[in-house]
Image 1 (tube, each protein chain N blue to C red):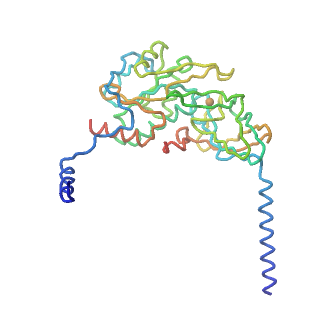
Image 2: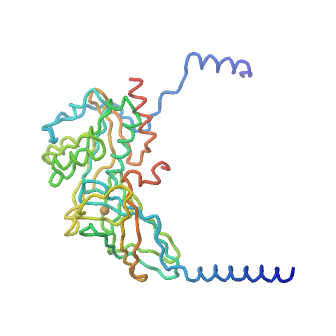
Length: 193
Length: 158
Ligand SMILES: [Cu+2]
C-alpha cells in the first residue's frame, strides 16, 4: 500500500511529466475523420464546395431561413465563438446549407448569413446536390404541408458538424451544445493542432 | 396620546391589509410577462415568446394573436426528435393555459409565429401584441425586440 509520501512523490512526478487526461471534446468525435464531399453548391459568388474551406476549422449546418429560432440560435452561437476567438477568429468558417433551395436563393442566403457575420457563407443548389452533400453528415429533412401562409414547413437535422483544416469531418454537435463548450473545443483545436 | 398613536397604526395596518387582499382578489385572470419579439432577421418570419399565467380556476387557451407588420400569425410548437427539429402548428390551433398554471412560450418550443413579416425591426424596439384568449378575451401586451440567439435563456443550463 502506498503511504502518503510515496503518493505525494508520485503526484509531483505526474505533474512534472504531465500525465494529463486526454482532452475531452464537448462534441461527438467521429471514430474516423470523414472527408467532406467535394460537390459544388451555389453561393452568391458562384459554385463552392465544402473542400474549398480547407485551411480553416469549418462548422457546417443544415437549415432554412423560414425557421425563426432554432437555426438562428446556432448561427448566433457560432458568431459569438468566432468573436471570442479574437484575432484567431479568421481560422474558423461557418457554412449553412439550405434544406429549402426553392425559397432560399443564394442571394437571400447571403443576406441572411451576413446578418450574423460577413464571413458566414450560405449555400443553395439543386436538391440532388444538397442531398449528396448531406448524406455523409446523416442529413434528414422532409417537407410537410403547412398552412396557406407558411406553404410548407421542413423538419431537419439540427445537429451541426466541424471540419478540420484538411476538410475532414471530425466532430458533431447537438443543437443544445452551450456556447462555452463550442468555444473550448475550437480553441483547443486551433491552439494544439 | 400613546393610545391615539396605537389606534392610528392599527387603522393604517388594517387599511393596507384590506388594499392588499383586495388587489389579490381582483388579480387579472390571465397575466402575460416577459414578452420578447424575435423580429430582427432579414427574413419573412419572426416569433414571440412570453410567460402566460392563468390566475383563475377555469382553464383557458390562447387562440391567436395579431401584430402590426405580421401578415399572418400562427401558434406553433417546436420539438427535437432524435436531433431533427420539427416545427408545426399547435394541435387544434390553440395553446391550452390550464387553471392556476404558467405556460412558457420559449425558443425551441411553443411560440407565436409571425409570417409575411413586413420588415425587420431594430433591437430594443417596443412591439404591441394582441393576444386572444378563449375566456379572458383580448389582452394587449408590449414586448421588446431581442436578438434571436440571446433569447435562449436556458442555453447554458443544458
Ligand atoms: Cu414557427
